[in-house]
Length: 186
View 1 (cartoon, rainbow, N blue to C red):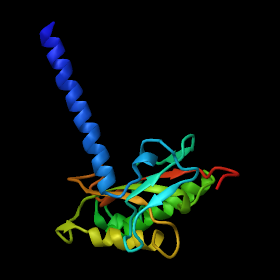
View 2 (view 1 turned 180 degrees about the vertical axis):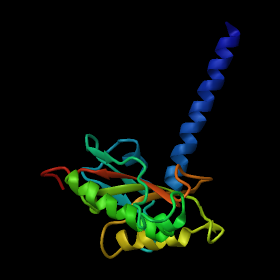
View 3 (view 1 turned 90 degrees about the vertical axis):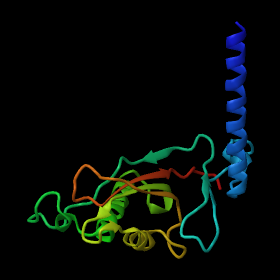
View 4 (view 1 turned 120 degrees about the vertical axis):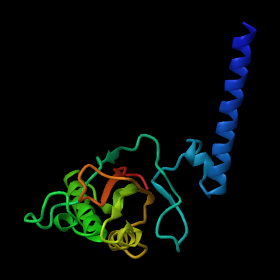
């Protein structure tokens, strides 16, 4: 019995430490901890970040707000005569990213939304065989065409380099999360 009590204390201390560190990190990164844990949750989507950053630090979404999640979306074919699995079939990273973000515009419109409703993007990048490295700049350039300070609100975003995607010609895959606006609330 004493063994189980000791294990319970160890797990309890670990959970307390995890929650404490998480809250500390939220404070350090500038996230409103009360909004993040639902205390005094905002009445509208609140975007946190600086004017000079191309992405947000965080987004707080009000309780009971409806989300719109996409699956991982991949680039459209730009040259159907090019061999399957080649860069020529889909283009470089910027071209592929632009194609995906354009697809999002259509998908969101079908759901009654627009890019203004997107709050988060998760981006997977693969090394471009022509460049011999991941083309982060190509992705950043495509992103800036759709999400920047002057037009659509910026989003929170994660960008990850991965070893590969399902099709060897794909250099990028993106997931998006949007939030439906609440009617009659500001």
